[in-house]
Length: 423
Image (tube, rainbow, N blue to C red; front, side, top):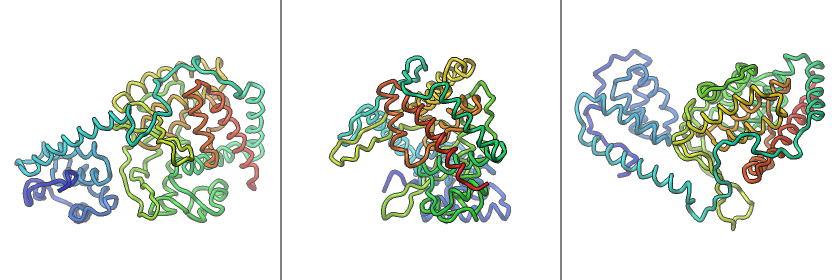
């Protein structure tokens, strides 16, 4: 039997429902969870009922155990282990079958963690490291060749101000924010919309009538897309560009806001049903994450991009936030696009979250632009390859110029596209 299928004594401590009194809604949740636990199918359909019960009765082993099982089925092994151990502590009587299984499961998780750590420095399957990890570096370490100069920045600011004047500052800002929400989500593969959806959403707002077609996205279709866009829109609206100090809590809060309705993601594979997985929201990641660079040649080895080890994410974020906050005080020393590129690059190589990094990073890296009177960073999905190339250039050549230039040119393209929409 698989180590990833929990074992426990039927009718024992983890099947005991007598310790709590459920209301009608909780009883329905319990039946959904019980049915899901038995079938193990569609854990995304019973995860939230299990979570509600575990929150309502935090010391109830039955609920805690089943929530742990849902985490396990949704690929969150670390979260599952924590919850199984909590359930074990709250159990009124020992369960020898479960205790033995949990001991083996704990050992398996530790073995896999060690294997992940090893593969970080020695990629599997003949892979080669194309971009080595470097800790956060000060902006003075980088060149910024060919990036926007003061005159070019002034021209772009004038274009943005002219657009705001033509439409009204509030309407212009809302349209730009909705464009960022749609294109940033498509850039990261969160969903893909068809027809005139982009134009409709940007012009008319986030509503079901604005979406012509969901080509790819959450199983709930347009309803799920709307929730994702509303979360993004609310996050941008609540972001304070006047701040001069960003904390761990601020970064995690932005992530939690953006990912509020994306706690369960779906991995897409050709000719297969989407596979659900659990996103850890509002917390730094607890496992190794890498990316691969596609050369377009199937005969080339797998090319690995390094990010910070998960054990060191908190420390590296602390170092960089200190550097970033100092740079915010010294804005006049740097071109806003160069500073935005520097913030973006350093946060990208730390990669603090399991999912949602790009969206969070582009918001935070927009701070110097917003302070200069410019709008948020926006990158169109069609330039994703060039965008990733500029990040690689910054890593390998210590040159922020291409990234800063791309941020500026994409802002210009975004404003130009917005101008094509009818008032």
